[in-house]
Image (cartoon, rainbow, N blue to C red; front, side, top):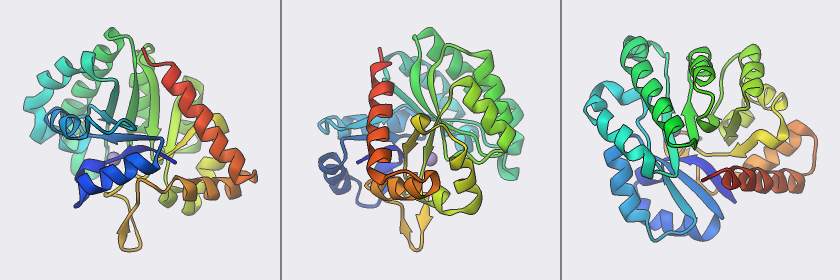
Length: 245
Ligand code: MN
């Protein structure tokens, strides 16, 4: 099993869970929300070989974390994975969208490009067009994975044209619109995620060990065997890893 976007460090029982996840999943990408959190979490998870910690600056908190901007740019050369980064155009963040968010996202993409490209987990809620425009401006950033994509059909086509990957979770795959978007995604560009503990289904946060459920849901949406979906996840993950410098 695998998870390409989890906030593993933010679960209440994070350390105990991380050991379990490290045993169960062949690969887990723990995204962080600030460069200081990346440093701290990297130290704690450093002995867990199957867990990678991604360097992030979450668009929802750029106003509070603006002081960490320089640190973020400094750390990029030593980070193997980047995330969570991106833009959020929801009403409560729209003030920072045009200024701080775009400035930081643009600076991060420039720096990632200078560093030779990275695998990046990207947030694009209500700002897909803006995210795609910035990816077009920075073509050498490596592998962009749009996490929990919720844009329009034409935005999805544009993202596919640019070469984006997509990480999807069980909430997305069980919603009518999410399932429809997934049905249009190239099978070799889709990977499982949870986005837990923020993503909650029923009363429980989605588990970083839920990729079997994601595979099951995708097999229904795509009308292919679950085993085929799982093998696809493995080969897509290998492809992404082989692209790493
Ligand atoms: Mn997230």
